[in-house]
Length: 320
Ligand SMILES: [Cu+2]
Image 1: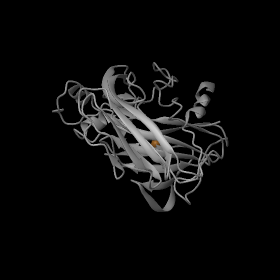
Image 2: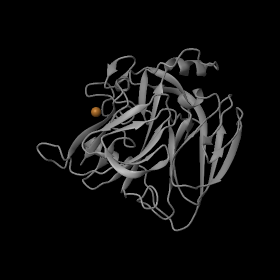
Image 3: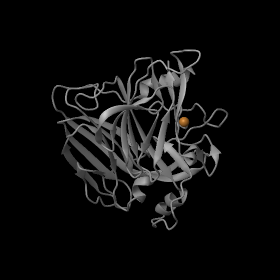
Image 4: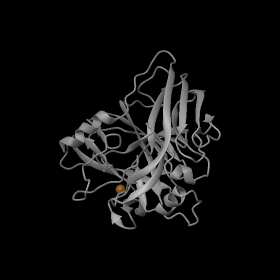
């Protein structure tokens, strides 16, 4: 168990500022093979940290309202791609081998997906997507000014993968078969249950990945920014505590409801919610430590490769 607790250090840290800054970031559009839940290798494209890596999803970027954000996109592939944040920026077509820098001023605080909107939806679902957070100016503990507060934040980016689509994209053709997802991921990983190869390895197991599994003590109120790059709708179910449900698809909800299951739209649906890390009210015997799962209540998403149960999109919450 001890190794899992190290995970708490992997979450995205953020320090608010009293002033606007200029944020510079480079994403490299790359491709390569990634290991799936059944240990097969599958082709993906990603907005990556370097020309030699493949990151799916792209690593989260956090900025503050008012910041000038300069993002350079280096397209290392031979195919045309784009970098789009709906309502904020659209790079237009970036030809194979080309590079483009886009700039915008960070506006409305919230959670956003960046993605490639060309060849839709294929480029997005075969890996070209990632997450951006805009924090309110000068505030480090609220989603938007006046929201319930948190002390740490995570991103959960979901995707559903049909290998036939990835393999078609790999050879430059348009997938000809109906979408049939065989892998379900959160932040690019699936769960590896106890006894499975890779169980407990943060490089393979979403239940142990430091940027995915929630780690806290009682009182470690945790914002989770949820984005869905995939074509499947999901119902998130979390154990231990109910979630405080703050937004749906970018809209602030009129009241904060406490829910244990929350619906997530497909095709770039999004949610923001706070896991309050309160003493789990139903635990018996009562305890302030323990481990609770988050999984999705659509049954196929619990599986991989057409049936392997518990190798789907799930993670864990650790009360330490
Ligand atoms: Cu459940």
